[in-house]
Amino acid sequence: MTSLLGHDAQAAAFLSAMRSTRLHHAWLLTGPRGTGKASFARAAALRLLAEAADPETGGQGLDVDPEHRIARLFAAKSHPDFRLVEREPWKQDEIIPEIDRKGDEPLARNIRVKQVRMLERVLSVSPALSSRRAIVIDSADDMERGAANALLKSLEEPPAGTVFFLVSHMPGRLLPTIRSRCRLLRFGPLSDEQMRVVLRRELPEAAPDEIDALVKAGEGAPGQALRFAGLEIGALDAALEQMARTGDPSNATRASVAKSLALKAAQPRYEAFLERAPAFIAAQARIRRGPELDRALDLWAKSRDLAASAIGLSLDPQATAFQLGSYVAQLAEK
Image (cartoon, rainbow, N blue to C red; front, side):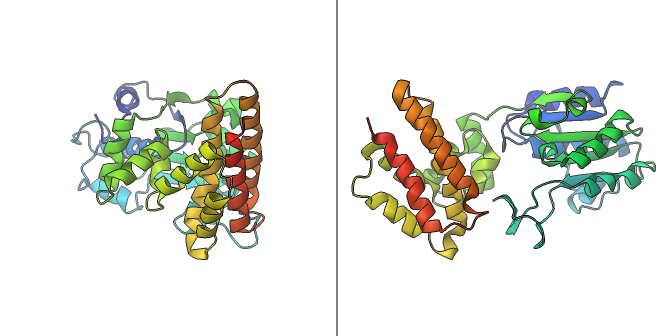
């Protein structure tokens, strides 16, 4: 139904509501990070605006011809009736950010209250090009408390014609009053074959072994897999598997990995390792029982805490990677 592979049911539900008299004013898109919720929100917003301006808009599902006048405005980020609210680039005088980035820029920790309040001016006037307006919050989990309260006011008294799309990886973190005012759309992981289709489309030059490694690392989430593209993630995963299998008694594997991640040029790969090592231990915990499960859970907690603090505390990459490798190697103990 749509080029957003794997989400046909969600697209059908939205389109059915959009073309009826029962279109809800707020949609909460939930599911694992990287499964395409934000892309779906943008596509649904574009389809909504295109059909509102031109009921004869062609295309299947959520797709809109890129040459359509509304699609061209949307692509140029100049559509007057669309707003995207997301974390802004980090500024030097702010708290040290997490690993998340927009391109090469680190991002602020939260969506600020001023960002949401800026919507009030937009919402106070009628839409410019049709009877519809679309607002995407990506992600709603990132809103600071004041921002969430400011958004709640708009959800409680929604302006006519405005549709909100709230992307959420952890809906339990949202205010219950926000959740209760939204219609829920759940997104699940894609199958391995669907992952391969998406990755081949996005990475046409990638070798088959890299695609296989990205499918494994993505765990059903194309967005997560694409963040690892070009970082030789397969080699990192192979090293983790070897350490967990053999215990790396000579320290050779973990020392080699740590050394390769120590250079400044290796920063993106180092950050990928900070994600992959705890994720690998978590995956091992899921297949263990008894004392081995207890040990794996303890190692996962230690690796998670170390990885989470590594960037913010400017820990030495080589020492940090070596210690993470040590946690993985302890999985081999009986």
